[in-house]
Image 1 (cartoon, one colour):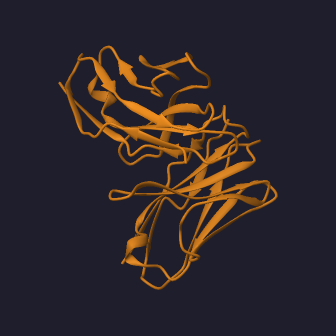
Image 2 (cartoon, chains in turn yellow, purple; image 1 turned 120 degrees about the horizontal axis):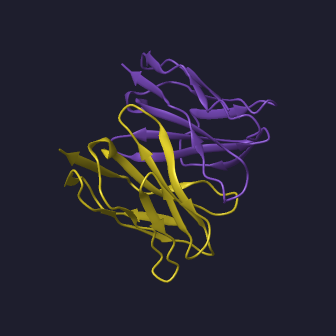
Image 3 (cartoon, rainbow over the protein chains, first blue to last red; image 1 turned 180 degrees about the horizontal axis):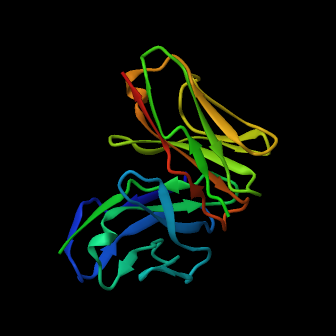
Length: 111
Length: 113
């Protein structure tokens, strides 16, 4: 079945460092791909999405490109801030099937 | 546009009791999904309702049930609570089709003592 694999955390960075969180997926066909973020004590918020190969999703300085050839959707940000500290979830959805999540990656940014 | 509203935010129940959680989706969304989030198991899918019918179901015991009303509001019920049911329960609504992600509520934090 379909699945999502994320890099283990926590990812610990200094403010203004470059961020990459790896995400790969397994799916039959061409799912839509998403990144969600969860701040402490809150629900999940949609950060960005891409619905077809080579699409780039972007929001709040974060970017991810849908790579069909490597079945990847890595999250990147050029300069992280302390306020970006949160848990990031990669997810996919295909048709009317459920949204399938990775295990989440905790990001900690220090001043 | 109002977001997804979950009530209550916090709940403490005793083992063996039952509990009902409520979710009001974004206006116009006909799909409502429920997830359980725990530190050990991460996000686990419970079920999805679409137009009052259960469309997808996760691997939870029959103690976990849900329903959806004609106005798309949804409830989930857990009977005979166990300590392991302590979790954050998240509801999400969606327009149909895979181009749409889910919009999540803030969750209900259930503690079973």
